[in-house]
Amino acid sequence: MKRIYWLLLILAVVAAVASLVLFGLPLAEHKGYVLIAFQGFRYESSLWAFVALVLVVWLLVYLVRLSLRLLVTSGGLLNPWSSLHNRRRARVASQQGFLDLAEGRWARALRHLKQAADHSPQPLSYYLGAARAAHQLGQYADSDDLLEQALNRQPQAELAIALQHAELQLARGQTAEALETLQVMRSRHPHHHLVLRQLQQLYLQSEDWSALLGLLPDLRKEKILGNAELSELERQAWRGRLLQAGQQEEGDAQAALAVLQQAWQAMPAAQHKQPELVAVYAEQLRQLGAEAEAEELLRHFLKQHYDTALVRLYGLLRGSDLGRQLQAAEGWLKQHPDDAGLLLTLGRLCLHSQLWGKAQDYLESSLTFQRHPETCTELARLQAQLGDLARSNSLYQEGLSLLDSRLCTPALPVTT
Image (cartoon, rainbow, N blue to C red; front, side, top):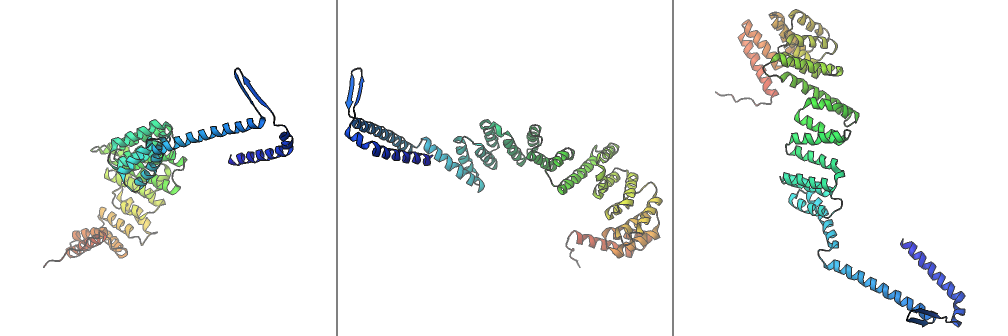
């Protein structure tokens, strides 16, 4: 705009000079005449005198306006409660408030940000910062009140305010209130990634595995998590769901078993191939007294997916047919002759079937590949039963020593 004004001024000067050159001489010979008559008023003068009068009047008006503007400005500078000073104070308060918030000076941050919010047409960020500062000071009621004021001033920012409210509620341990806040936001913004992310963290923290499993399709659809993280979260959720299912209906094993089996059947087929989940399910079955079902499950799984951890668990089970169970384990030994865990399992199965000689051979072979506390304990029990107490005591001591080393427990001092 300034360039346009300067351009117009230059054009006016050029036009004036041209007019003076073209018409200056004729006008110098004829001064002209101006007559203004209105009722009783009469004004007569030459043209140039009238032009000079107009310029003087215009200059006076300009000077009066300039004086009034300077007077108002100086009054604002002198008046501490003027809008100029209010704007300056709000600007300083906002800058200092955020600095105090970042540096952990909560009381000063609260005071400055509240002051900035009172004088700002867009106070959302100031209210959110002030609410966080009040929360850090333990003034939870004031924090909620500030968020309410933010919602009243900027209702279109409801989602942003609710997200911070839920975050603060979780930090206070108000899990139920945070869940209610996030569920309301999910109903209004079902695809918002921050709402889904906070819900996922809340369900994970509260171990609400059923709700987390229900949230997984939305997390996958909206690509909230990467594939690896999503797979791990799904596996963790199903693991927790199986553990919870086996612990329900305390005192009623049959009811807990039915819930556990229902949870396993509801699990996707791809998760049935996860050794960790198979181990959790089999262990829960064992604890609920369904060892035969657990044995059958592991036997069929291990035929296709051999896993050392599952093999160790298999040795703790008593199936409906001990001979078939032992035969299945011996079949795996052909492909895994050096697996100490499998040899331990075979030793245990032989103990279940009272095959003492074979049990001793398998357990001795397991120790040649790995000195494990469980193997030492099983062999020590067998040696005690066979009457070799010296070897039994030696194996018990070795097992305890191995267990101490695993637990990083310092050896007890020897007293004399």
